[in-house]
Image (cartoon, rainbow, N blue to C red; front, side, top):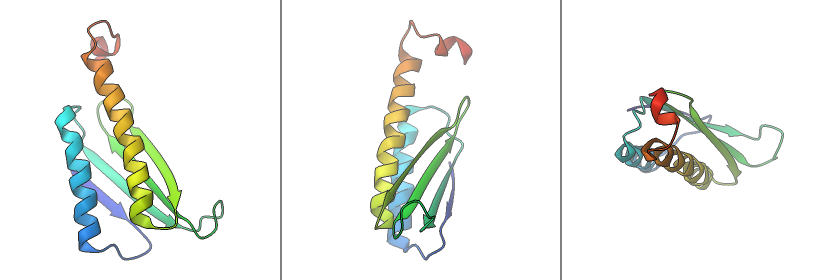
Length: 106
């Protein structure tokens, strides 16, 4: 899986490796995730002083996307990752359900 991390501030190597290891943990679901975009924005006008975190996973079928806000970048990412992981688990459950119509589309 390829990672694209963009931020208007410097992300430490420890935080970068933490982000990558969390995203790599999603590969165990075998959904065919090809790449992930992680974006951080500062003070985009909706929540002054907060950092906006966005994660988009590219896989066959619809992309998975989530976002969150927090004062700290890594906390915002963790909240976003939790939302992405819930979506991944839900999609995996649908694909593994023998009565699901999604399995026929693949």
